[in-house]
Image (tube, rainbow, N blue to C red):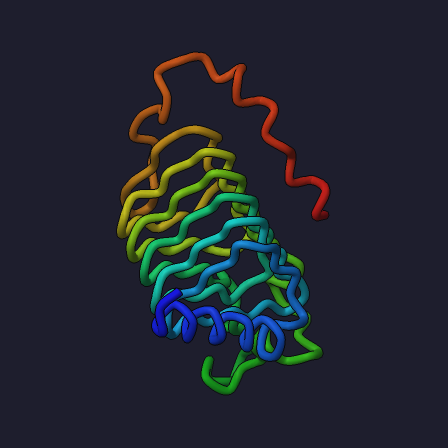
Length: 181
């Protein structure tokens, strides 16, 4: 193992044991430089997860096994600030990071299935479900649930085509993420 690989390994281990210790992160986790993770209540990450540099998860989220997030991917809340507080500028309004936050968005959990690839610069809004085996193209914005084994692209993300041409019965053995609820 070279010095660069060793430094990267030490960096990840320090982050897992300090800054990210309250989250459930399985083995095989890799985070690129300047990656930010924050969840109000729940962040569960499955085995062999890769999140590229300058990416962020800033919402409650459950992520399956063997998932790839490219560089600059973001999972963000739809309602991080209470923009409907009359007479209060949004900057000063109640926000989801407050312990007593009681507005929209509280309790929304984003679920990313197993074997998902999210491309460079994609944005995933909180509360959506991305089915197993999906591919989200670079630069897409995911605002609604995505069906398993489809490729999505665009703003907002739309179905482009099936990921596989063959029957998907052989893939049904992939475990269900309901165990994390």
